[in-house]
Image 1 (cartoon, rainbow, N blue to C red):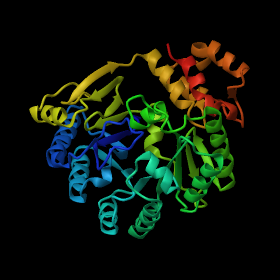
Image 2: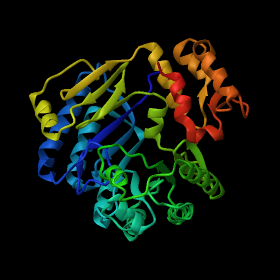
Image 3: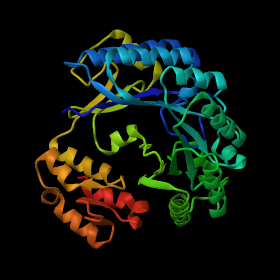
Length: 395
């Protein structure tokens, strides 16, 4: 049976770029939105029609940028286009990334009615001073208000993002942020270490001495603190950066969309700069809004999963797919199952990566066959050092 797909939609529009952001986003260009939405729908139709049959979809993620800047009627148009061209499962997870300060009660009610059933809210910090350093447009009070409005609108699956390792941030300040998030009773938390590329303002501020340098040892302590605090608060860590509240009713509240990536299963990416991976081909779209839209309107078609605004398409051979299955799957707490690896590839995990696995077990970075499973997974010690492990599975 063919695995259901996931779909990522990129909305590269922001009110203002944050000081740490290196994503494909643009501020002050909302006038280009109507043409962009039409181009996005054309891309969706073109790619869907290039496949031999209807594709089953079990998760959709509207990311950015700031998708919550997009008017509800435009989002409705895009979702209607998706449903007309793909076969949604009865319980398809539809997530919208939302920034506090861009939401209203009416907007949240409207998008909930149209089928968006999960929100990922960019809280980032529980301190207004830290939010200012990050260049965010919202205050802590806006986060509280957004969560309250979302609950009233009927959302029962909320995720909050937090960033740690800010310049000058102390362990106590990070503990405060964790508890500020826990007090909002979200179902899911994503915690990310601040990583700065050389082209972002905050990197230059640190280089110029305007902000203190980040402390890697302190960031590791922050990660350990979060692991302990969230475990005590009834959360289960299911991926390196993600925790889910244990639901008494048994609902699985893990991000289905992100699990698709980590399990190395097929997904399509639509929009400027979007990435996809399906049928042994990894795709990337043109990143500039104007160039992307123009290509979509030209209507060029390619072999699935290539779309009209394609920038690059890379063929993934079997060995590379096995490597990526290892490094992505090891992000998950459940790890990589030996039996599932064999079922997928027809080869034993140890026959392909035996040397690497034995070395990493010796270094106490991997553990095997714990808890009655046949899985290989990171040790707790290795979770903050995961890139050291992942490098062993790439050429």
